[in-house]
Length: 188
Image (cartoon, rainbow, N blue to C red):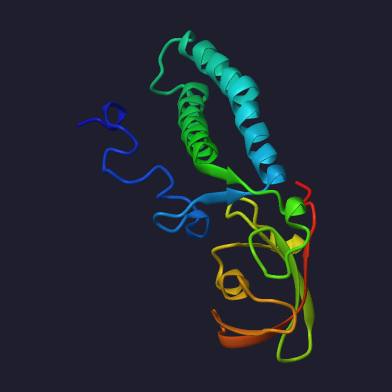
């Protein structure tokens, strides 16, 4: 059958199956997200729906009116881009529908590490690092934001300042000491 008549997910795979593996949520878990992360995803979805998609649709309509579509690069590229945009819209909509917003700023007097915590740790070599535990859609290693499903974050959950935790990293088993735990507002 011609590929034009088949669905993108005809093989039965999940919408985010082709997505980065680090963005997949563990089966049966919530999609925890900070208010800033939720706002960022909503803004991207609105941009795609209100700006990007209408623009591409108008380009495709213009290209289709030019005649032969089989060799019309604007038409072919536009249709491909439209599929990409629609796939991203479905993904973002699904993520927002599953989202459970957790504001770390309201957890001010908690000594244990939970979602939204800003944790300072010291590794075996004496190097200190500070990480914010955020949702899978908010990770940014350059800003010290790690997903709550990452091995380090999983090991840190429920620990307190002064605790040592051990976790499996890509380089092997590591042990770190928790120096401090704070709950700060996380900017987008």
